[in-house]
Length: 328
Image: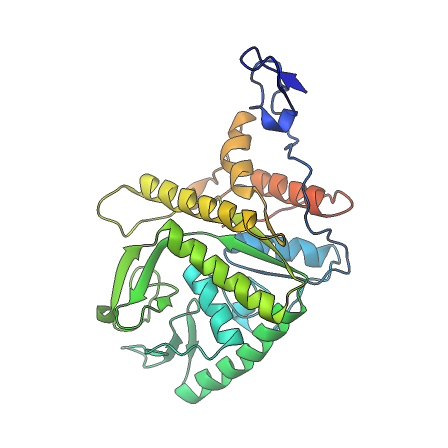
């Protein structure tokens, strides 16, 4: 325990005091966290994940190590990032919509895009999923809803990775598309009906609460692990702030919402991947950015550190991860 001259009466555990300050041990590669209630993950625990690529990296390791990670729609290219063909969902609005169409009759005003050049059918709510015709699109989505429900109802642990607060929403009904056509999507629909805006703390918390409500109704025994992706924005659509400031705003908003969400429910827990990458790694004198043109991603050393601590926190034994892949 550390004692400070400023607080001579109080003692602190080393995880309560900044690493290396006063007499507290410096950062040494072991991320110290308080003993906290949380799910104990064994090889028989059914686990699902969705969100950014961080969920994908957990998926890869859990499968490699023989854990009971849920894999629905294994034939579908959009299922390689998550437990079903949700693809990557970067914001809490897209996540909430997954739960809405899985457990209720969610029907946005504009359900499909017709690409202006190829005339292919595109799902604007899942990242870059294209079909030859409307019949194929509707048939695939009907199958997907069944698989999505199977995954969410079977899970005993669900990992949600939060990424961004910037959204593009339908001005008519408020539905949020996964990505705008243009810089990310080569095909795409008519963007005239969509408006860009920055979502705020209360909205993101409300989305998480709605997810919890639906899970409580359909799978009340499931524990939710929430984390914030440490990967920064590649670009911002905002005109009032630079990309670094916009990225900081996104992560801060989501971190605050995640904290409030976890504090309000006994079955919701926060995993500090964001802090491990962006604060703890620099304390070790390490960079956490990747090299090259995608230097807003997290490097392999940081991924390895995050994953090792994930297993240390939630499993009964520490797993060696030899070749982690990029976190995004």
